[in-house]
Length: 148
Image 1: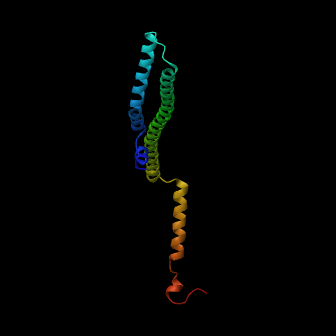
Image 2: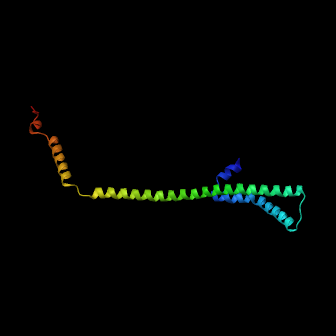
Image 3: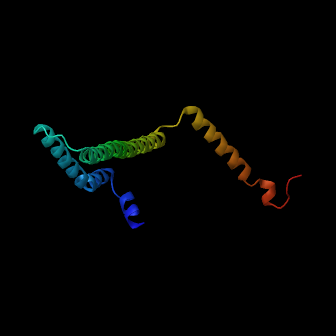
């Protein structure tokens, strides 16, 4: 159903507006039925039972429709409010994520620019000396005598 799909694609505000448009004629008719009833009462005319039943049934149908519409509008209003909350949460979430990334970048910069501790420098120097000691060629190895 194309209309059903089109309705799903509307925002909550647009759905509220569309619902009011769809029900405008019904509420206009209900208003006219209330005027008929009020005029009869105001003029002291007691309608025959068939007329009273017809006016009453039209008014009852209108009140039921109004109650259903009010419930529907409440649901659409809550949907609209939730959409606003979701949008705000997404916005603030992106700000927080950007802030966290900036903090992380600053921490990386700080670590990179921080002078090494004395113990760390000493350990690196010793590791370098061991590496150089292992990589240097001994005198006997150069003359082809080899170790042992």
